[in-house]
Image (cartoon, rainbow, N blue to C red; front, side, top):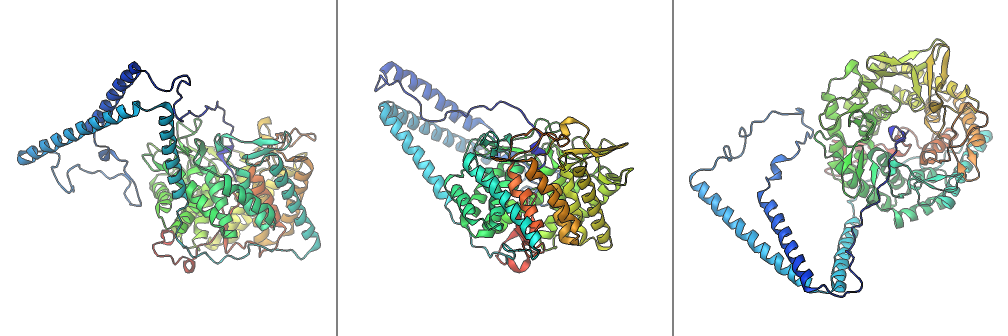
Length: 640
């Protein structure tokens, strides 16, 4: 279930700066004496400036960001001297003043000596030919590359793998259901094979143009998003040759040391989630190593005054920023709130608590904040720690935050009671303020905007039917109520499909007056191969075994096959109310990761990826439940 990153953004891509070795005139082997003198003067001035800045700039250690950590108090008011190890250390008198002056003089002498040494080295450099200088530069570059490779190959600590049940099988006994499952598998083959032919290594595929495609959520680099996203679907379908092709590409080509700005949320749920699941399913170490390498690249995004991460981060420089359209520079609830599952598993697999601490820090901060009507607004400013625009939704911008509260509890073997309480409190507020019944008797989830309920529901919000069903167990006396609520949401979302010409649901639909479960604006009539409705069908099937959910899922599969399939793969459509729709010419990576996986599971037995052993991340990548009996590694923070 992908959220705000799919909102269209525009902007010109700036080509990366050329940071390679300097170019020299080809007609000269050495520099003239006058040029050497000028260069020497410039270099001398530059070195003087650098050392001077180093000496006179204030100590940056006194201005470090206050880390909230896991403390109960968010912003302590600390007196500079109170409680310090050396009270009054900023006041220097008597012998201490003399010693301080001696230290300053010693430092000046050291800087002067270093300055002289640097000048001598510069003189020696300028005596060398262009070829010699280039050779030295290349040697240094090779040394850095080799050090990076050595670091990447550093083995991770051995970790006891949880008892993994149901990673294959699920063969249905009924022949009709078996044929339907085989058809879904054939659709997966068609999507994968055409990506393999026309888009291999690109992030996604344009199935009509028959070439690679990418969006700004992946930056300007080709990271093979479809390969990583599709791996676990291939595995559970038994397409092991295709799985091995993807694995080989990852081993040989997947490199995160690129000058590319990516969505922290999207690369977490698609790449880290996909790599972790591929590791658990196959046991191949390369997937775990790649997941950890990428996670390290995402950590600089958390370097904000509050610890709430930026939406975007440059994988090479670590510089982060937020989407320009997001409420005055705010971070988005669904983005910074959809990291918990993957980061807990990263800490479990590496023994490094840093990932766990980052996501727990976010949780602690949110617990301390006042919430209007008990609702979480979709925007939070990472600099000030204040809410942005008061807009709450269970669709785009908010959706998977609530999902991950519930799934944190499930993934902890139902021991993370803090997460469960946050989920219960949030759902209670959502039901009170956002969930309504239409005149025609359809239950829908509206959006709260500045004290007003907008009677509009997005396709993304349709996942909530499955979430309510999944969370029914643990709701004490409300289990039956939430299972029924999930079923009502499923029916509403099915109606949004059934009331279109293509039997495929629009991006969002209204409940105003006589208009119910129908898109009104042209810009909301598209279908981009989204999985959320089918996701809810699958969860409801697992918990009720009501045959209507398989029937509804099959209707959706037939509609996708009829209207979205093209010779080069599968494409989204621009208008689900037109019997002759135009294509958007994009085969989304989540179509292989989620839509086809949920359809395949819908027509499989419950023994394939059983829900008491696996918890699916928001991109449908299943991660194992971390039971206490399976987490015996000493120092493992994920189960404390």
